[in-house]
Image (cartoon, rainbow, N blue to C red):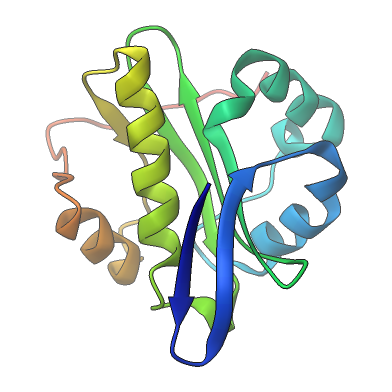
Length: 149
C-alpha cells in the first residue's frame, strides 16, 4: 500500500480494487471527463474477468472510506497497459494519479514487463503532460485501432 497527503485533504491510501468498489469506481469513470469512456467491457461481469487475470494491477486510492482515484493496469505477458486512470476532481493535482501510475509500473516491473503502453486523448493536455513528466513518449508513428466484439 502507498499513502499520500495533500495540503487540504486527509491522507489517502492505495490498495487493490475489490468488486464491492465497483459502484464508486464506475462513478469516478463516468465523471472523469473526456479521458475515460465507459464501454460494455466495463460491466461488472467483465471487470470480474479482469480481476481473475491480474487483480494486483487494478488499484484504487481511498481517503476516509471514499474512493478518490482508480487505475486499471494490464499485463499480457509481454507488454503492460494502463487503462481508465481517473481521480476525483477535488483530489486532482495532489499526487494521486502519479502515485497510482507509479504503483502499477512497479508491479509490472516485478512481473518482468519492459514496456508500458497507454492511450490518451489528443485534447487531454493535463494527462499528456503528466505522462510526459513520468517518462512516457507520444508514439506518433502509430494509429490506434480497435474493434468492439
